[in-house]
Image (cartoon, rainbow over all chains, first blue to last red; front, side):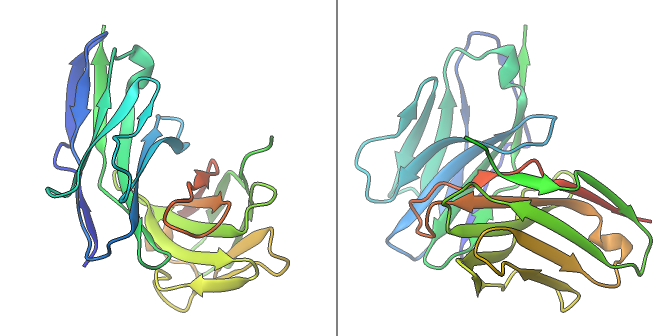
Length: 113
Length: 115
């Protein structure tokens, strides 16, 4: 069965520090996509970064990078130089095989000044 | 360009009533998704459209839920005989295509409250 697991319900990070949000996944498909979204208190889901299962390089988008370890089925999000505006819920998601996309339960990030 | 839009932003209804939620995807996006997000949880897949047809409706919880996309653009999620447990934020997303590499872009959601 396909599954996304985010084991950190909440995380604290000091402003300007880096933080890693964990995500592990389970799928028997060879071709799949992994996504991270940010959801601020306003409720909108904001796309951050994408990693394809066949991509050999880790994805990077500005201050976001995805630490993709295929053998361990993990796709951790790394946010460098945290800012107060990074405080939000973060969701890991996977799309594989069919059309359904599944999301993890999310991690709430708190950035401290 | 314009993003995904959803109307209404908030909907309050009484138990047993019928509601329609509308989604207007990004122009040119052939794939459209509906999700339901309950408080403190991640989005839960409901249905996926490729063009006008529902390619995967396996996430619809029961036959009270139905969605259409008659012209391959705007979609309407319809809920009959609403129940208090239907209260949630209903999110719509669209993507260029339906493959696993296509990024989904979300609308702001419709918050449904069933009294």
